[in-house]
Image (cartoon, rainbow, N blue to C red; front, side, top):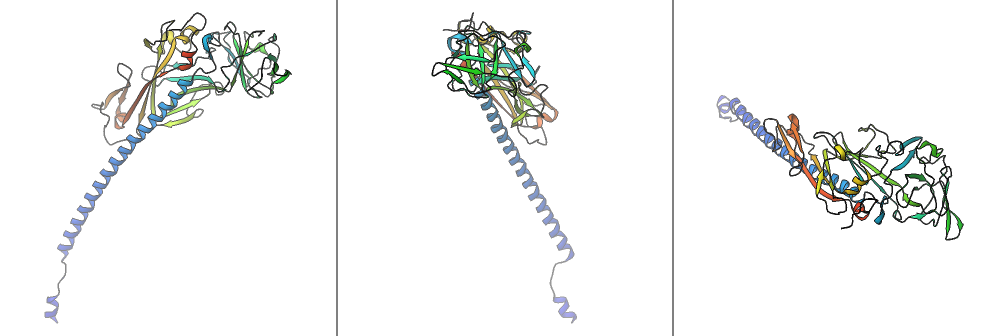
Length: 381
């Protein structure tokens, strides 16, 4: 029995321990390789997310800037309402240019609100949504400011609930935004229609015109434009997102809670006006939205000279890396230039541990270009 026992073969304790050590080392190496690969994959994916998010944000801004001013700029007349627009909504006077001409009563196609320093700018755009928004409808009977009925030459394309803009053909009166309380009522078939804008359940109609400092009496020859809906959009960066809100419907201050998120991981937006000399269609100057070009001091003449917007979007990857990865960072701080000679966004601390993508373009405001020629400013080449 002893002889047979000595002939048995197997693994000794030492051999088992050596095998376990080799196995553990192999598992550790595989784990480290897998973790490194996963990190690289997340970094690449994060860079791709920044690429797609930035492109989407720039597309949204560019689309609305190109369409801005539709229905507010009328062919060779230029601005429909150079003196401003009376706007009432849901119990509140939102715009009263008769009391304060610089309070935003002039609905500019594009208005840039400077964020201060390298903080994100805000871009506000306005346009009509109606396919017939640039076809004026002529008033054919004097309308006292206390009346709620306008008699015009035609009613095509108009219906209950739509918004209309009433003003003088030569821009000499403050305009008023009204909401149709019923479909156009024919007075003489194919020639005369009554437009009603009764107060009550229609939020854009005030209880009486005296809520405005200047409530003009619109007369024969003045015009009505069908806006259908006033597309008034305020784009801003909130909580690392590009957000939008209607500043007529929603009151300031604007936060993540009362704005609609559009694109995630957008950390900055910067914009500048492209300005042409009076009487020209050639942009020869890029100006900051500050000083005389600040959003709350723009005049009708200045608005007529703004023919383009230069905009840059800074998008960030959602993945925070273990160490600084942004090429401009050195010692935990750096900056990103949004365009040559333009603003530089400072980075510090953990901000250097993200990948960034910059998207920049110049967008013509085509309705401002087509609508050149407002009183005192001829934009013919």
